[in-house]
Length: 332
Image 1: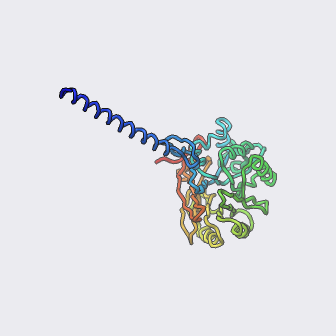
Image 2: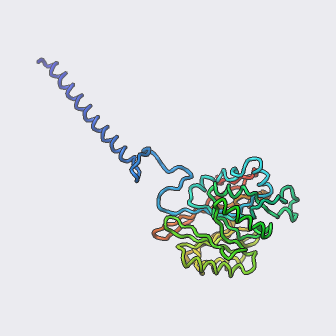
Image 3: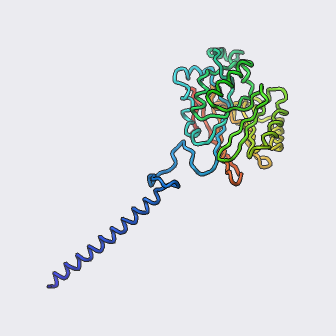
């Protein structure tokens, strides 16, 4: 064989060797990718898959979302009659679905009574008499909101019949609640992945509110891993009062892990106290108060609980109330 023949044979051998090595590399690369594309249950997922927005990631942590005042009458009712109830949550739905539960204040009764506040003069008595269409109970269930707080200054706007209907519609829809001022059973308990979380209420606007709250805290503390008090207190549109601050401290001292406030319709300060966390007011969640910048900007707070260490933390999520009746996460 001549020199040129031997050279061609050598080059062919090198090419075959390189191709074989490349094939081996590609095979192992694909094998690794397939192996990495198995989740903990052994089922195939895309190699680049990440938890979808609005889905609770399976990390073992418990995630709770808290919002402020929800009012579904007046302007909100008018807009919902045209667009449907669900649209008011369009801008916050991903946040809600990214949590195990969403807790907020139901600022009025759900009844079959006609609205007096629609079209009423601002500042008149009828303007503050709320009733929410029965369809809202189903909407709350479908959106994943509950338990809801009933301990506030508008829940008795339609008197005893109003709160009786509220319980009926919420029960039928499967929405839990706490803070009923007409009942001795005021506590709601969630059990999430083996962790018991109790929700109690303080309502400044009912006689003996503090004593009832203290009784409920003691009862909840005896059987729960976490106790969270949702308060309806303070002065509208004003900073935190000294008596409210002192009361928040007493609730923490009595055994609460966190105190979440509503009613002032503006976001107020937060602070830590003896291992507990206090948010004095989250402001509005769903409301038609567009007359001031601070009443249009509310706050959602995301609470993450480690069920093993019993540690917890909070993340603030600013929201904005839009004049079309909906609420959205605030993007700067």
